[in-house]
Image 1 (spheres, rainbow, N blue to C red):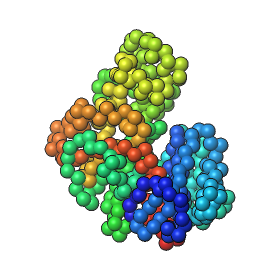
Image 2 (spheres, helix red, strand yellow; image 1 turned 135 degrees about the vertical axis):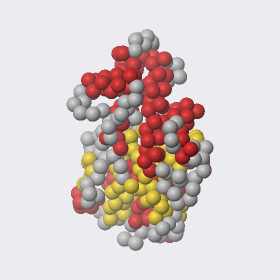
Image 3 (cartoon, rainbow, N blue to C red; image 1 turned 30 degrees about the horizontal axis):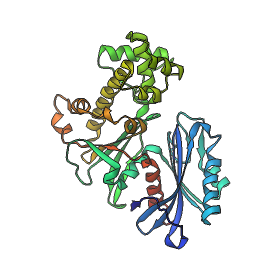
Image 4 (tube, one colour; image 1 turned 90 degrees about the vertical axis):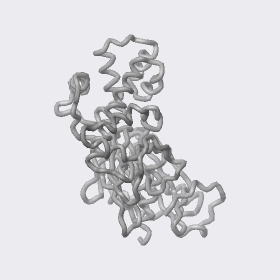
Length: 354
């Protein structure tokens, strides 16, 4: 199965074996795509983009995409695969979206949409499936190493939350299959005085009663937490940029906007980078992904300079396993639709015979 870029010619239903709806649903953005399947090729025909927090519910947005396909292309969609940010139930039939007031119930969706087959997966599982079909144009290598065919692959990414998946090659499906994870909620282990101070600040700032998690640092909120800590505890000057950032409520997008010209933003990203590299190293030692590490997420795509020589040096730094870490290549995923493409791939793979 491979992806062909979005077609711009008039759609002819006879050109495809069947059609499906795929979705990438996150705390910030929600994307849907109408896909056409022809043999082993998958084509994205139309795509839809929503701001998650402006949606009253997911069902109406899904029905809007299905209705568009029917009204504009005379396509009846009965198959659907959705990658959703949040932990699914063991039965894979319900998920509450992380960082958004949205949820999805498989039975309710089947009842109210006209769909006959629905596959729900985690949003980072969708990114994992997408790695099966990334092209050279979709990635940029940021650390040298040799990728070994059929060896485990790891994908990680900081955005609204922190995601991670381990991909294992499946001989039956002739593709990589991702394993779900909720690494965002793992405890963060401070390693120096600054990090101890940062953790204690976050507990008070966010009124966290239990442990600070990795996701409290490696996410959009993580950038805001680090920035607020520096502003309140490191006596950085209140610049004109800082005023704009604080007026915004310390939005991570604003920290990114001024990251090259404001001293607090610069230091925020330096701390963020160092923690990112160390967490990536720890996860790599746990998984030994000799197929490579792929970094996804909006923060990486919008701030690619994070992945510099210092990032690589921290990643490779280990008293006994440095020689192992040096063997693992790291790639930055450039394609912002990797999750949507992965959901399309998974839908075509597992719903083909339905």
